[in-house]
Length: 241
Image 1: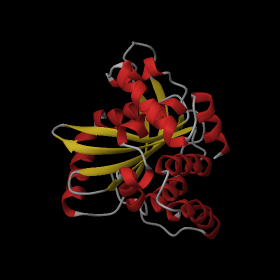
Image 2: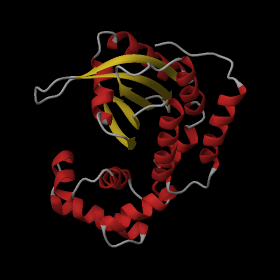
Image 3: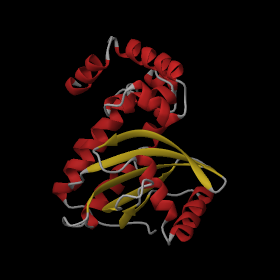
């Protein structure tokens, strides 16, 4: 994994600066700001989907928290796990650990990715952009954008667009972990993302390994936060926003 350095042409710089305005909005509703940023970068790079996660170093594997996910075909957990399990994982992970120890900027790269399914179905072949940003001694934020292999591959300009914006996201990551900044706990933000993806309470409970009673309590708190009474109202508010 290598640092990316370049000169940005004027047209692309304007595109990134317009998207960067989201970073300077009032520090509330961080989950919606993440959705808009990931969606905007998908549009800028031509990606079919993208995710934003925070992972905390904990032994051999990181603990992953999903902040935003756009598009279908690959989940945030699949993308992070695939990145860690690739043949060059040890080298990439060691460089990331060095960055976390010494401080540094974002690390951004393009790569071809193979996602394997646990159910034995055919693997998905993707072209990806991965960008990792140091958040502290033991935490990092990751952006990943992907599209099915067979279309034109991501190029250096695509990676530069992601890298330039991601390098300025420290404050947004911090705000996302401050419950007072956006009015929801990390677990509620996670469940909110699943609701926006169309998942029901039972499906969310199974996926997170929690009881339906616990999920229902979180969903009620989410509805109260957004001043709605049902998932259709929540989705409608998100679409309008």
